[in-house]
Structures are given as structure tokens and as C-alpha cells.
Length: 352
Length: 217
Picture 1 (cartoon, rainbow over the protein chains, first blue to last red):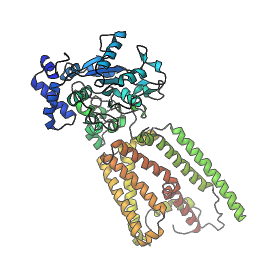
Picture 2: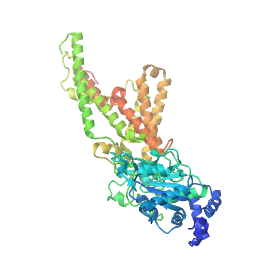
Picture 3: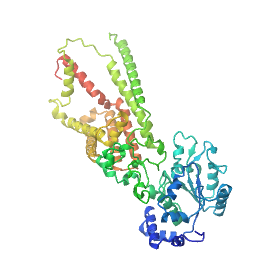
């Protein structure tokens, strides 16, 4: 796509029909919880949108977020939208390497100062900056430098949004989220391990359409996608209400598709769009595949007491602590009984 | 640490530790305390039978008093049964017990458990209002009674709200439910709620005492 080409022109050149384009616009408007009357505005804005510069930084990550986006049911209109941005820097996708790559980043930052979108996946190690460097630059320094002139930041994936797996106890690298470092820029957290591709493109589409960040929830996530929990939208919810639960992954309940709550499903406390948008072109999502939600779009999801423990179960250390409490209580009881006996004996002077 | 993490983790652990310490302390303290020596001649040798009999007979109101205490007595049965149905037959609760005990048991459909829970809540609220407006009940009610009622009602209200996804977000409501139950755990040993342990022991004790005296328990 040429820089002077509008998105509408580009999509038509790629063979996307007007009907297909409007379908995408209406789906985008719907995903973003916009009223039907906003459809024309969305279509017009996307039609005339110019490609914004995007710099994508990958820090302590597994590339799953990039995989999620690029390996999704391509080619789709969403992926074309992705093509329609000017992705000026991305380790995994760019052809340039070494100093050439870094020069591309610097050039993009200079040419689009104050206007470019910074996308970050992966957490930032602050325990020792040497744990993760790019071209000899620590993740921390690169983030600060690149964020300084960004219009907004999209923290893609739970690692960038909340620290994710690297942040899990005992957090050996001192991993932190983007929002722990950058506090003076708008940050959109698109959490998930990985995030749903359509959610990433939906956020980019919103930016293209309105030139602003979408409405966010308390954790900085787009409210349109993270406004409801998985449990409320889960197709297995009726089984929960009926008290029909799979007890193991291969029992009759599991085969009949009953609720996975007792197998540790974190759907009731996880906010994401998996149950509605699903994955692989709307084919399925983890619960539909027979595994409970692990709550990957929530902060500290690795440290919530185990993926296979129900959320109504406690997250304490051990039963030994309770046995210790019983022993301590017994000792206290013996002590107080003996003290009472001594007091009574002293007061009454009688035989025990 | 989120509120739910605290409630499921340290909050739960410490409340259980306090409850167990408190109950063991009280029970063992009572057992090992100084018991007054009964110098009278025993009227019966079968004190165990007397103790067991008292556990059963005292589960119904004494015929002489039934007319006056019927309401309080049977509403007590209603909410206790409803409460234990809610606690023991709701599947997420069973999952909780399983995490402690290592085993579970069959439960009821969630929407069926709501019925005893709602009845229990209604009866408890009614009993609390009665305590506030009934002249005799007001005289014999102590802060302990009100606090115990409030603690149990809180656990029921937060549980029902979490079930119905009412009020704050689900995880917040679930955390509040956990915390209300943890307050209940902590309150049990130091209040009249300790009767959950002592009711059998005290009935048995009074039964043996009466048996020895030749009194009909």
C-alpha cells in the first residue's frame, strides 16, 4: 500500500468488494459496541483512512501474540487492515536486520513524531536490563525512547499489559508491564495469552476510524471486548445452572460437554471476548475444545492457585497449617484450663 | 494482590486458623477445666444413656413450653436446615470442601439451592426484626445475638448476589462473599455461634447430670 493511498482504495485494489468492506465495517462497529447509526461514520473513516505509522516492539515474549495475529485465518479483511498500517518496525516481520532495522525505527519515530502508534508485546525486565536487549539497547531504554513521541501505546498480550508469564512468582527477571514504566501516554491493554486477533485489529480499526483510543475498562482494556466475563457468554452456562459438571477430562460429563467449573475453569472471573468472537474464524475457543478457561487475559493469571483448582477453592499453603492451628488451640486450651484450675483452687481452697 | 486473591488466599487461611485455634482452645479448656465433684448418691448408673436421651429429647420443645416457644423453635429449624442445604449442596461449595478435605459429594442444581438460601435469608431477617420489636426478646438479646445474625445474613446476601451476578463485578462479589464467610469463621469460636460445636456436648452433659440426679431430661 502506498502511503498516499487511502484504505478504501487499497482494499478495492486487493479485490475486496464494497459489500465485504461494509460487512467488516458493521462487524467492527458492532464489536466496538457502537450504535448502528455509527456504521456510516466507521465506513467513511475507514474508506478515507491514511496508513498510520506503527512501531512494534517485542520484549520478553514468546511471539505468540504476533503468531496469533499473522497466523490467523488469513487472508481476511482484518489482515488486510493490518497490512494497511505502516508497520515500520517489527522484529519478526521486518526484512531489515541489525543496524538497518534500528535505523528504520529511528526514522519512523522522527518522521511521525507525536503521531505514530507504539505496539508492545512482552514484558520489560527491570531486575537486570541485560536479561533482554535489542541491538545492545535494554528493553527499558528502548521503551522509554520509543514511547516518548508516540501518540498512544497498545500493549498487546498479557505480558505487555500486566507482566504475564515472566511476571509469575518468583519473577526472576523483575518483569513489569508497559504501564508500570510509561505513565504519561494513553495505553490500551489488549490482554490475552495470546489476544484474540480480531481484538487487536478491532483496536487498530478504532484508531484508524476515530484517531483516538477506545473506551477502556478499569484495567485499561477496550471495554467493547473486555466488558463481559466468559462465564456470562459461555454456551455451557446452562449446565452450570443445572449443577451438571465434568469431574475429570474424560468422564461422562466431559463427553457430554458439561460445565468445566470444577475442573478449574476461570470463566466467571475472566473478562474477554473468547466466548463470542472465538478463534480460528469463529470456529471454537478453549472451553468449546473441552478445556476450562485459564483466565489468560487477567493480571497474574499464573499465580491464581492453579489452572485446575476451581475458583471457589482456597489458595492457601497447606492442610498442615490447619493441623498446626489445632495443635496450637489445644495447647492454649490446656494452658487456660490449668490456669483456671489454679485460680479456682486458690480462691476456694478446695481439692480438685 | 486483588481482593479475590486475598480472600481466597491469606484471608481464608488465617480465618480458618483463628477458628480452629479458638474452637480447640474452648473445647479443650472446657473439658480440662475443673469440674465440681458431685457428692450426691447417683440415682442411675447409665449416665451415657441419659446423655444420649437428652440430645434427642431436647431437640423438640418441652411440652410445657411449646406454646410459647413454638415460633422461635421451628423457625430455627427451618433456617438451620436451609443454611446447611445451601452450604453443603451447592456445587461450588462442594468444590471448596473438596479442596480442604480431599473428597466431595453430589450436589443439587444451582437454581434449586437458591430456594433454601432465600428461605433461610428471609427467616433470619424476620427473626432479627422480631428480636428488635418483641419486648421480651429485646430484653434477653445481647450484642452477640445481633452480630451473629448480621454475620450469617451477610454471608447469605453476598452469596446470593454473587450467584445472581448482582451488584459489583462477579469477582468483587465473590471476594466479598469469601470475606463475609471468613468473618463468620473468625466469629464462631468467640460468640454464641460456638454452639455449632457445643450443642451436642452441652446437651449430653446436662443429660448425664440429670440422669445422675434422677431428673427427667
